[in-house]
Length: 280
Image (cartoon, rainbow, N blue to C red; front, side, top):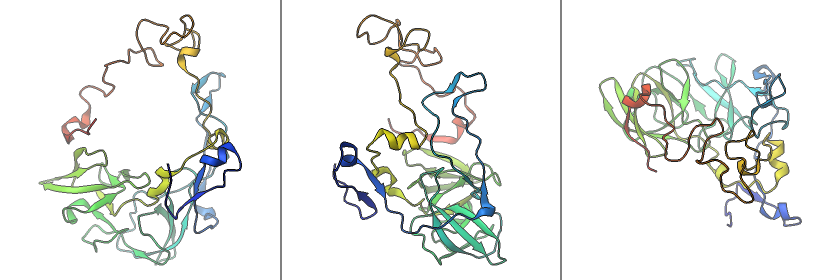
């Protein structure tokens, strides 16, 4: 597969792994704001008893957490973009913004963001341009949104990945209809806040890791097939020779029957809010 994109960097095929590897070009390299950094407690690999509690995860490069503001509650205060930064904890970029009162904050980088752009968050109507944030009921139909709340004031939960966005399709009393990237239509309270535009760095999906070493730096360990294990290590284990499944039926890692069984919880609270299911 040939990748024709100026933001994607391909290497010369000096080794087998370099032949397939590609990375994103980072236009601006700046040091993160120290006051907005925090530590991360690793929750992967083995627990305090020495047992593997999170499979296929562990090690990886040490990271510092960037305190991203998913609420943006400093209303009616203009902010300017100071820098576009790399965040090792997510696939999207983040923006360092400075409010008029001198306070700094991190937010998700939207598509088309540039240093010097000004954005605002308000409870009332705002200019319909990427980066601004307001309630869903204040936006016209067809608007692309990201970092959408599910409960007013709880902070953005939906459409936070690189390139993600939802489309405002309809307004019905206290709810609005949002179309997701998976073509699912669901209702969200109209008083919930959302940022206008799509999340940037959509080219992330074109990256090819190329080597196992790069995955180890990301904290992803090798994945061993279940059928290659013993019965006490995995539900697929056991059998003789090249047995597809050692047991009578395919099961999950926790022992539940997997084939033909729906994994979504029955009578989930959000069932009533989903108008149209995603396409298979």
